[in-house]
Amino acid sequence: MVTQERREKIARVVSTRLKGLVAVCENFANPHNAAAILRTCEALGILNVYIIEELVPFEPSRAVTQGAEKWLKLKRFRLAERAFPELKEEGFRIYAAVPGRGAIPVEELPVGEPLALVFGNEKEGVSEKALEFCDGTFRIPMWGFVESFNVSVAAAISLYISARRRRELLGREGDLSSREEEALMAHYLKLSA
Image (cartoon, rainbow, N blue to C red):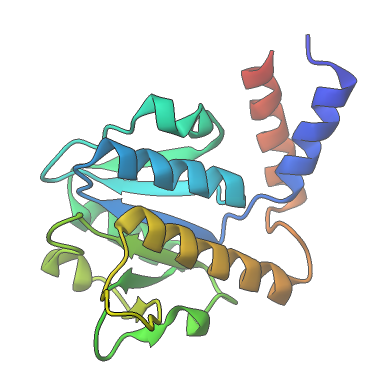
């Protein structure tokens, strides 16, 4: 049985969920990075995570996720060419985290429309195949000698900035419809029972 206090907490969380901001994880090899991104998404209220595991399986460390994955909608794909067309069909603009020239600053991403941020493998970055599906690339401005962040840190910074900006633009915490909130509330109550 779910207590009234727990029910109220779940309702608050559901009301802040964002479906219009998606994280896409491509070929993550490190279980810590995979787990850290899931935990970040849950903490920021990002509901959907697309996982592309063409080269390596996505196996997050459960010690790091702290159960965050059960509150997320994880969509797994063996092929990038299946994941990205689905996002396009749903109206998402797709931007890849690629430091360097031509990449727009993360603060300029188009958060007013559905937005998917792609984060690539720890060594190779976002694949050429994935880049073909992207509307553009973005970067996190840096002022030190180091030229890149660890992928889980880059994801946390980018997703935080994008989620905050999306909420400010919407003028509310979440972007689910009433019907979507009801369905998610029922799902979360079931998980909590």
